[in-house]
Amino acid sequence: MNLAQLFARNARRAADRPAVALGTRPVSTHADLCRRAARLAGAMGERFHLRQGDRVAIFARNLPEYVEILLACWWGGFAAVPVNAKLHPRELGWILEHSAAALLFADEDLAAGLGEAPAGLRETPIIGSAAYRRLLEAEPASLVPVDPDALAWLFYTSGTTGRPKGAMITHRNLRAMTYAYFIDVDTIAPGEAIVHAAPMSHGSGLYILPHAAAGAVQVIPESGGFDPAEVFALLPQWPGSTLFAAPTMVRRLTEHARERDVETTALKTIVYGGAPMYLADLDAAHEVFGFRLAQIYGQGESPMTITALDKRAHAATDHPRWRERLRSAGTPQTVCEVEVADEEGRPRPVGEVGEVRVRGDSVVPGYWRDPEASRRTMGDGWLRTGDLGAFDEDGFLYIKDRSKDLIISGGANIYPREVEDVLLSHPAVREVSVIGVPDREWGERVVACVVTEREVGEAELDAWCLARIARFKRPRRYLFLESLPKNNYGKILKRELRARATAGGKPG
Image (cartoon, rainbow, N blue to C red):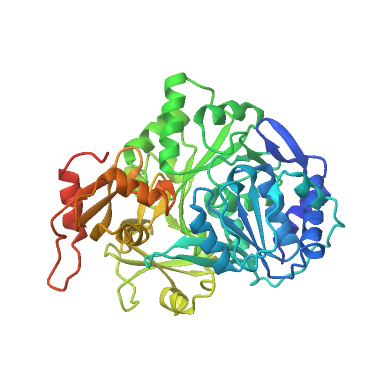
């Protein structure tokens, strides 16, 4: 069943109600949205000769057109490849080549920095341009029936090998995620809204679907990003609003609301995820907003769908283990099975730590053009998350650590190997190990522990990184060492490096 049918149903039952808004201004009704998407899908097929299953990349900040481009992809049976708008052009180029994208939709601000187009990319329509508007004059395409296991969203998530991996999210996976939202996370009523202040290339964009299923409004801030003052200014126009936010965003919203005594009654729900939430920050958010927060734990390989801690659990202050549960990731979502297992895949008893594993309709079938990674990560039918956790006797999951060396800073995933590879390409760098150290504002900050062949300054290494990877991935501090600590097998002791970096003071 094609995901586009979720939108087509609204075009019939609520044709004239708002579907997409820019700031406080509605820009399309449900009927308008489907008409535009059908014409855009028609242009993809007739003018650019795309066939069912072809990939269409989107490299843009949050825009109203993001919704219609995603819908057009599914309407025509194509697969969307949303790309993080913060990525470096070289990183974008690799994704375009690896995905064999036939089209790239880019917004005007980002298009100026695009490099040479990879072979196979037929066109780069600039969103909002005259050329883009002409695409909306094409003959509308009929909604294409698709197999439930057809590719819908190619979600690129960096891996420990330093190259991104494309999680192949299917129509079935996204339907399961949509159902789980209503059962395990929150309710949505027709006419309510989601404010897309977080990137639509990731979690906020995935949550387009449950809100579309309910006939809600997709609200895009005029800035195309996150600004607490702008978010609170929008809310009175859109009562019953939901936001998906990283913990750092929740903290900033809380601080802004508390300092300025803003009106928050129109805010229905904040769904947070993507990084651990400090309990003190959760307490502050509850004090300001009341019990309007819900937590989800998921991965690109099981989008937004592993466990959830809903608003009822946040509000269960009379439970003897209430505060302990606030530190958990919640309980398994309805559409999947979750277990904690040892290295051989044997389930661990309650209270004992093991790797978190998931299976069910939310779990992707594999990685694009990477059968070996697919076999390693989900070859036995269980998704190996790489996260270490334990269940309590009531079925609440507690994430203890990450077996992968993932750094989560401001809700963004940063993989050390990717940064290490860039630094090792500098002629003065002999060895490097990249770690994350705790940071009150960002959750973690990136620190590079470097052994050099000659004297080199932080400014030079910083410029080297900025020329090759996204700004948010670069180290915020460099720790210059004579050698990296290693065990008897030559493995770098990252725990010792973290201790040294933490003892050395705050990252710069």
